[in-house]
Image 1 (cartoon, rainbow, N blue to C red):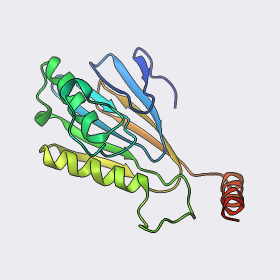
Image 2: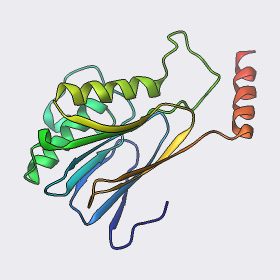
Image 3: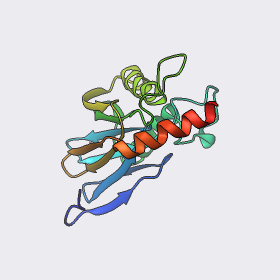
Length: 178
């Protein structure tokens, strides 16, 4: 997925978020992490987060908010959108990620980190009254994401683990269990 001509390119690392106008595209790579995009179609302003976990589990002060946690990343995006003159309730949301990076390895709870992240994103957006217009969640492997803020389009490409990665991962875990 190439850089779009005439758009400033921003790449998000885990725990980062970015709100921008139509002159930007925002990219990231997601494994079990989740990205939420919020886009205001009239103003053509939007943002994207890249969070690692749904929540840290305790309340924090506003100046302590951390983009690594889904609930806090969303509040930080709301703050940045408000600073740009956008009411987040008028935005459209898209949700991506939550992939299973270790297929074949089950936990007692049978729910993966990615599934918890995806479910949290849906619940957070619903709680704040924001419509989710599309999503690409779960499955195996990672996703490459590009958000074109000028028109709200998001490209998502899911890449499944190769046979070699799955094979090596399987034997690495078997060796640990011995």
